[in-house]
Image (cartoon, rainbow, N blue to C red; front, side):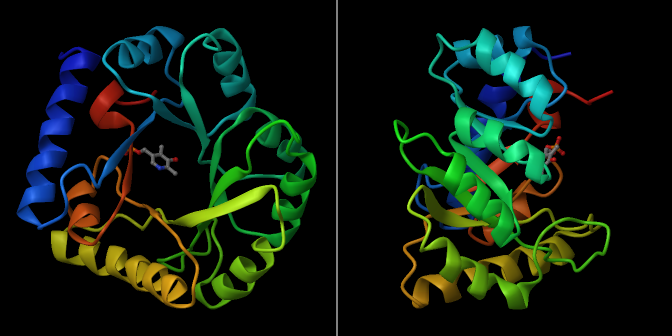
Length: 227
Ligand SMILES: *Cc1c(COP(=O)(O)O)cnc(C)c1O
């Protein structure tokens, strides 16, 4: 098996190739390494080859990692479902939240964000495939939530996130990614200066880059399969 450093180098090359293929600006697609369930040693290996952004889903597990790695310049992104009882720890320890889908959670995060820290960067998670099992807000409710987040000074709305349902072909994957991009463009047309379109995982990164992703969330293709 390849080392994590080799996987990251290969992945970055692949991202540059796809930026070029789809006429995206060089370095316009950032890499968020999804390290959920993976040990500290794996994260350290990624940090050693220059990776800074890490995505995690499980709060207790991540708080331990953040503590252990506090001397490193790692940036922590929470990408999992958020219950009310997790908002304080997320507001205190993370720089980003990709999975915001309710006003009540936004208000709690705003209240809990320490004054000493810059606003928490947030993305609204959209249920793009309209699956009842998936978290995320319905498309029609995005605009109201975005408007309300504007009134919360300790949150900074950066963009939209989605985890589309698995699709077999590049065309089907692109169709879902395109829907999120259209919503992103619509918000920017309304005056939101959003810069982050969080879409694309190990299995649909080409479709995501083709449709305008600015941040890929990649786990398996860096750290290998999860147990
Ligand atoms: C686990 C996870 C990923 C990473 O998926 P891979 O297929 O391992 O690349 C991306 N986004 C979210 C929200 C996840 O939970």
